[in-house]
Length: 371
Length: 251
Image (cartoon, one colour):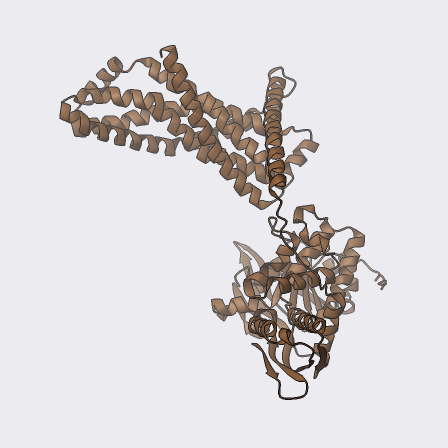
């Protein structure tokens, strides 16, 4: 520990410094110096440094800082008893020190904040438009065979971001089917309307629950991985490397991911339908005593095919939203680690939000159209 | 000369089936600049990582400042870690903090000094590594390669550690910056009385900066000592690496 003892009894004030004057042990001395010694005025002060075991640059800077304040208050300051080591460090900090150093984070005023936010907003709008423009452009390019389409990359992305999600989607939908069936069965039982469980399940799952939950799972699972992977690729200059080799990132990274989700989302929704209804069927059987054949007969009768198609048709749209938001967020990553976290979070939040808005629009449009 | 700061004894390391170190022993004395040399993949960096407790020691013992690493409590390890600073090859600066904040990280965490004094310490560290005060408010992404190295060095020195580890400090720098950095290391060693341990491939650094070195090849230390002593050792790596003549250092 660093310590000081102040002796007022002699003609000049003696400040005896003892102990280890190292940054980690300076706290009490820093307080004592600013509370007592720095308040002296028009005195002659002698710092006795003979008791110092070790002195580091922080200790030396503290000493000189105190001295400066005292000189300004008209004190005469002297050092005694410094050994060679201490002298060397004091002369070093004297030589390289900056007395006026302040590193304060710059905080902009309200007008500047508004201005910057507005600029950011318009930049973002421009970036989004540019993103879709580039994507469309490279899509048209591949359509007319100016650029070779990356079949392998597409297959890989279909595997990674969709096929491997089948397990979790199947499990989630099965459980959702169980929950919906269980909750409705309690109500339906009281009215003796057991058979209507099929209508309730079929319509809610095929039309709304399966597409929506599939999209949410895919957004959380694959959208975020697009954002993180492309973000890191940008930071490590992999994307720049690809550019120099003539591999456009939109053809090589964006299109395969987007097409993979456009193709696979309906397939995933189909499986989600299957497992959701299966979960409901199990509960209908055990809770309401509805046999499988009865359930399926009623299903064909009560649930028109249009509900299935309405659910399925949403798939590609959700796929575009999830893929483009994930990839766009990845490309927005700047050259620091924090922005990877921020953009990955944004990709999931925005994708889920977009999917829900899109679903609401579909709901209105399909109802108006009479589906 | 019996003031060993680092004592490495009979270190054996294997990754899977691959044997990396086969009974490696060496000593680093106080105040010297010591280099780990050798072909890539010979385990120089691994040895350094074992010394700075980033990699577990599989067999053998390492003592730092006389304290054996294998029987450390977590508190003891924490205290020991404050005795050294590390400059990583890729600098490993915190990208979300400014240069000044990067240097102040340890001071803010381990000391309870007033902000104004911390700022003064940071300004001092910036000055001694050759950066200006204005650079303190920049972010790492706004710096050139040489400035990033200097920032990382200033951060490694923030608590005035007596021991400094450098992992390929001059790689990725242009020749002028690399020589500047060499001179900086020498200057800081004298100013702050540091002991420096570095992994390096840079011939000029080896010839002009290192006091002593260990050459790792074929899982063992094939030579240890000053440049003259090392050059006289017959080993295929040393022959090809130094390839004959010794250049004169320009000081």
